[in-house]
Image 1 (tube, helix red, strand yellow):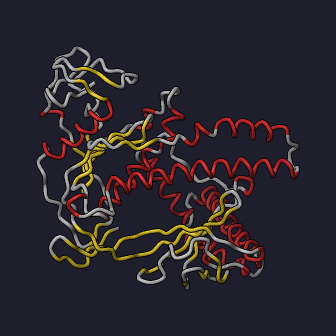
Image 2 (cartoon, helix red, strand yellow):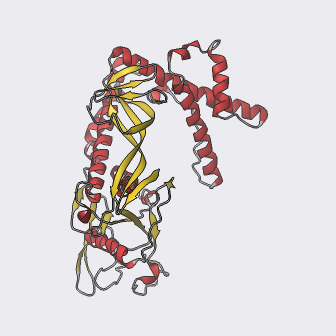
Image 3 (cartoon, helix red, strand yellow):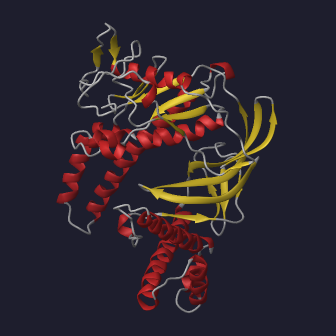
Length: 426
C-alpha cells in the first residue's frame, strides 16, 4: 500500500506498509511462553476449522471469525482455561487467518482453479508454526516488548526502527529452533524520481540475472550444492528409530540445512534486486524504467529435467521484490508480454531465430551479428522501454495495490515467415 502525503518537484513523501524481520534471543522461560502462544494459535485454527465443518454438515452454512471468537471466549472458563495464560490476540488472529483461508478457497473455486486448497488441520509434528499479536508493542534498539510476553532481546541491534513508524502487528515464528519476529508497520519514506537510463533484466538458471548494461548476477544454486549433505541426513533419518531422541536430533539437522538454503536464496535475491534498482546511487544513475520478462514458471516446472533448478532460483520472489523496490526508489517496472521473443530476436535487424534451442548460449544471426543469448535478451527488453508509447502514471491519494504494467509488442516487430509460428513468436 502506498499513500502520497506530499509532493515537491520530483520528491514526495509516501506512506508504505513495510515489515522488519529480526531474530529473537529468548531465555528458557520466554521460549516456553512463545511455545504456549504458538500452541494456542494452532489450537484455535484447528478448533475453528472443525467447528466450521460441523456447522456446515448440520446447517449448510458456517460462521465467520467474529462469531467463532465469541464462541471461543464463551468456552474459555469451562473448557479451555489455559487460554488465559496467553494473549487473547493469538487465537483471535488465528481465527482471522482461517477466515481468510476460506475466502481464498472460495475465490479459487470460483476462478476454476484445479488446486483450490481447502484449509487443513495443523499438526505439531509439521512444525511449531507462528502467531500474530496486536496491541501495546514497544521497540528499543536492543529489545522488543510484546503483550503478555514482555521484553525480548533482539540479536540484531538497531535494525528495527524505534521511532517514525506506526506498528500494526507483529508475527512471531519458529524455524529450525530459532525464533523470529516480523514487525508490520506504516512508515513514511521520501521518494525521488529516478532519471537514469532504462534497464532490461533477463532471468535464467545458469546465471540468476543478466542486465542490459552487461552486469551478471551469479546464481548460488543453494539446493543443488546441498544435495549431498541432504541425502546423507535423509539416510541417517531413515535408520533412526521412530520416536527416539536420535531421530529428533537428525530431524533438527535437516531443518537447519533447509533453513540455510532458504537464507542463501533470500539473501541473494535481496542483494541483486537492490543493486538493480541502485538505491544507493544518485537520481541520474538509477534506472528510470526496469523491464522484466513475464515467465510462465508453472509451465516451465512441467519440464522435470529443469524443475528443481527452476524452483531453486525463486523467479516469483525476484519479481515481487522488484515490484515494491522500484516504487520505493522512484523507478517504474514494466513486465514484457509472455510471448515476447527476447532471446530469439536479433537486436540489430529484428529477425527472429525460430531454431534457437535452450542449450544454445550463443547464436549468429543471418545479418552476421553474434549474440550472447542472455545479454541479447536483456538489451531487447531494455528497448521495449523506448519503443512503447509512454503513458504518465497518475498517482492517486491511496494506491491499495502495486501492479506491474503488462505490454505486448507483437504487431510492431519484424518476423520471418514460418509454418510453425502461426502468427506467434515461437
